[in-house]
Length: 587
Image (cartoon, rainbow, N blue to C red; front, side, top):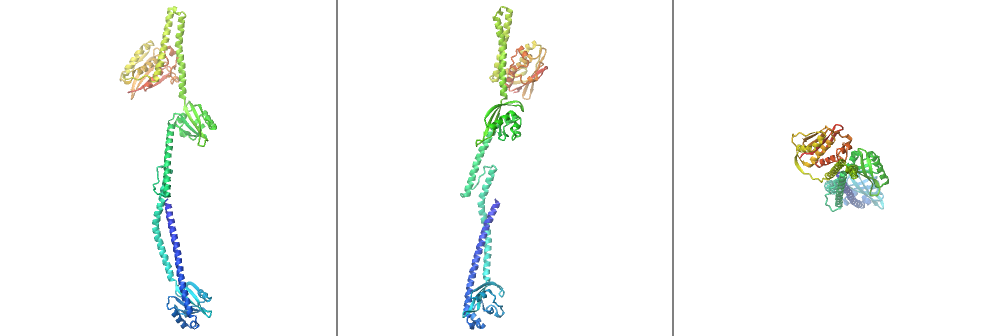
């Protein structure tokens, strides 16, 4: 913008200089023509006056009379007067000796005078050594031209006047340029400054600095332009703020969605993914954006449905299985992206991971089947033995007693199963409030072992209690913790062969307390380790029923540990034994 200011200043000064020069040349020419016209008229009058005075033959042919007559008519020597005969010979000159002067026959003014005209000529005088103006008029005697009278005057005064005028003009021009430079610079600054300000704001707007404003309060067109720029900047700032807010909201929604969102362009390339998709596909977003969906998704079924949605522009829902990075079941919604012209320009894919839902549905189905199966067994036994008694077996006292004992055992087993189911339901729904109290861990474990001691002695099992030192105190729910230990002990006793050993260990580490129940039982196969906390899941079904177990003990333990904000882990080697480790926060 500085170059434009300089250009504007130089242009205005150039125009001023050109106007002054043209005006100076015009006035100089006018002045010169005015001087020349006045001089011409003066010389013409002088020449004609002298020509009238010397036209007589006795005067024109007599040199002394001629000289005397010329001096009478024109006594001053301001005007140079020269009398010339028809042959160009100088008869008289008031500035030089006539005898010493050359022939003037070839002088243009003289030649014009011989033709009866008034001759005018401007040239450098070799005699006087400066420019002269010559005016010659004919001298007539009886209508015959016998010579000419030439008057001349120096143009030195006119030339000096013109030179002085040009000097004054150039001096004025220089002063005008100096003063004009200051004035024009201020004027150009006042013109360019608003433009520079508007340009600055426009440049800031292109750099997303929408808060910039033009600080001009003028009422002219530039002020109106500045107001329009400010209004545009304010409108852009508001629109960009709204766009930014919408983008932030959209980004927040997409980022925090548990469902995956993918946008595929009409060129079948992935243009947008959210973090949930990265987790589902096991690939960072920056590595799949820009790639073809069939290359990035690594699922033929998913890509097939995307192509269908792109080709047919229809909205539909489909369940898709993917196997990388791990097997998942996805509920996928496919919808075409329609632009403002109503044209399909891509596909929006929303992926819901329903793997856990399908797993829970299977668990629920298995639970119903297991409950039905487990309930049917004791009910069938009770029904069968009852019918047998009713058909006459009651008459045999010993048989009747055996049947009634079996009915009593199955009834007890059915009662325990229903009680465990109800307890598990309450625990899952957190309907059992925690009664937190300070307990001595080793004492509580000792009381639980005492309860299970009879069962252990029947199988000749050895139970080793934790060392009493150091003493460990916990702020937790006593009933929950006792039920956890009782269920783990029950499980260990049930799956440990006769003569085996069970060891209980306690340990305090930082902010947690660790309780381990170690047995030398049959162990758990590796493939079953992830499922042993499921309801009614049994590794050895026949052994579990014989032991009177309901298949719900470890499921209850898992939920009780979760209620106490703890964690349970199982380590087992088939044929060598199992270690259950419970960690509970120490408070």
